Image 1 (cartoon, helix red, strand yellow):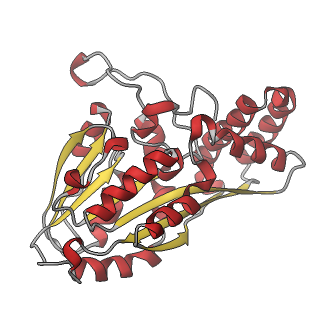
Image 2 (cartoon, rainbow, N blue to C red):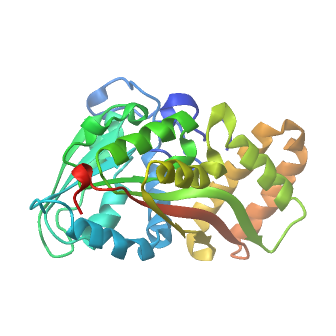
Length: 313
């Protein structure tokens, strides 16, 4: 993605906009006329991608997660879910209605503006009608500790792993495993994109984009593999399932925004592509507007099941 649409450095931990699409970074005034304190991710982009995210996430991982939650030690009455890099709260809106029982969600983000959106739009009820409540916690998830997850039933995140460094992944894994807390980490890019009809530049753009995702030491498309290795080394069981975006005429606006970010990142990585990429992008956007373009952006979801804290079953 281009510099105008891609998080870089520590701000990537705020509502991580999936590396497969643009984050759209205009500075947006905070509620009440406050001056912005951290780089903003446009809620418009996060809202635009939310239906595609919901359709893509792997429901196949929910049954093993439900079994683990049902068998958690002591069976506290309320699920406590820590949502890391929550953005506008799309993970809670998707997952809370798919789980039964009272839930309390702790929404983590560096951006108070996005935390405001997440709180306002939070779900009120679980799948069985039980109450869902939320609180917010502003901070850097790169410094997460097991103590911060004390009492947690579950950790969730969306489009997070690929914007972490190896050290940050180690920190996250140590915190989850140290707390004996399962984690559902969805929608990490895996470096594969399919466009129909095909074009001779597809592979060249894709390779440049994937290289761009490693900027600053980020894991990018290697994140899912790395997560499996790191969590597995710490003794956790890891399940991985595909969660592709499938974009077509019904999601033309999202497809167009994704295309701009995807090509922009490739050009940022390889400026010599600029002239040809501009022609390529114009043709792809035209096909998108006419309903002729289909795109599959491959992601994977990761379910981590550590040994329960204290060795309980």
